[in-house]
Image (cartoon, rainbow, N blue to C red; front, side, top):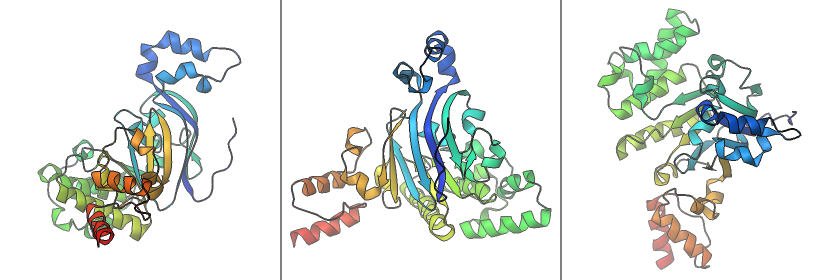
Length: 314
């Protein structure tokens, strides 16, 4: 199968991407094998296979420098999709893979995870799951040692990253002694050592209090603006991510329901067909626009909504 060449500005380019987890295949081996053995039919296009797919004919392009929120119902395929961006699928999470995922023009199936991880960093929902060293310094050094950098350069890069992220004071602390927000910063720091162009975070604020969540998101916004790093965040709490994201991807039933600018998504009806909890002020302004009472942007924060309401009333 051939695909059109991706736009040079596209960092991630998925074409007709479908995926069935190995566990699902093993549990339904006879049925899936029968579908895939049908003559004259592309298995990835067969509707009979759809109910087994975690991802179903995904087509997606992600451009450089975006701050993207990926939202959708629980089990919709969000985490599965981002695992294809750095080769964890199908190299680590095994299964039946159809289609193509290009990362900077490199085929994610052909490239080693160690190579793709230098372009795409992934931070888990619980940072403790990826913190393995006895000190923050050793944690950050781990990735640099694996690529064979000299000790002097490693120490220099560690100091630079710690200072940039504002966590120099944590250098000799044990990662498990830190707060959730501090652990998230250390996880981000360990990824930044490889200077990735893309950082993906799977619900990074889920276990954080509002202040810590805001601190982590402000840091990611800084990375996005200062270093032009593309940020992709899986997030259930829409009100938390809206002030930061420039684009939203809605994933539903293993498919892309919509991928557009934040304002386009808020103005459309796709978001309202999901179980994503939508802030009340957004619902209010959507109704005001529908009733021709208001024609401006839909506010992304409660403070912005209050300001616009005061202007409408006065």
